[in-house]
Length: 263
Ligand SMILES: [Zn+2]
Image 1: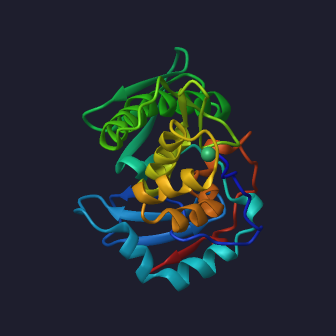
Image 2 (image 1 turned 30 degrees about the vertical axis):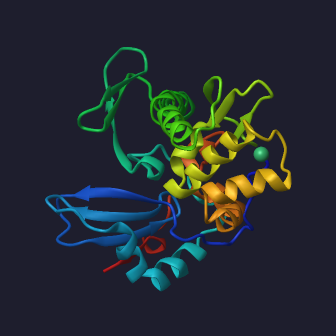
């Protein structure tokens, strides 16, 4: 697949921006918080019911953008996540860190509760990041490969073997023998974009090039093909900072007044 990851200019804010949800026993209503360490956080009262995150963000768009613009992009944190959102399959996972007296680092997956437990004595950024990335890759095998199988059946475009990779440069690929490989990071994209890539690779099982016929076929399967192609120029911004960070960024503790809180 030829849509590369493209880095965004330093100060650009993408919409909707990446965010974290944080439950709070003290909060009485929904709050927004922007810090250099955590970026945008939505503080949710402990017993708050379901709400539409995107329209809540939309309501406060000018404030959020003005606050995010104040954060130099380099310091946009690479903190370990307390929450992993997988928009492609409409799932949200909580991550809990249980530090223990002893024991090696391990991850426990609690499927029914959509919860990941990180356990172990030492919980350093890089080893934990590796565990989480590995889980995402395993989870992508279940979810993205069954999506691939489903779309193959729907479209009648047959492939040989599906696999998951986590590459920096490609969202997917299709070999001459019809083996399709998908990038685990597709899970972080909106469903329509993830599906666009899967359809793109399936079309390669018929045309192993980007000829007119190839685009005509993809355009038939994905009526918004052009918009989706365009959207990939910004797709990198959907990948959370913790996933791509090569190390935890050591930022100074902010002074209190640097933490913007919307009330
Ligand atoms: Zn292609």
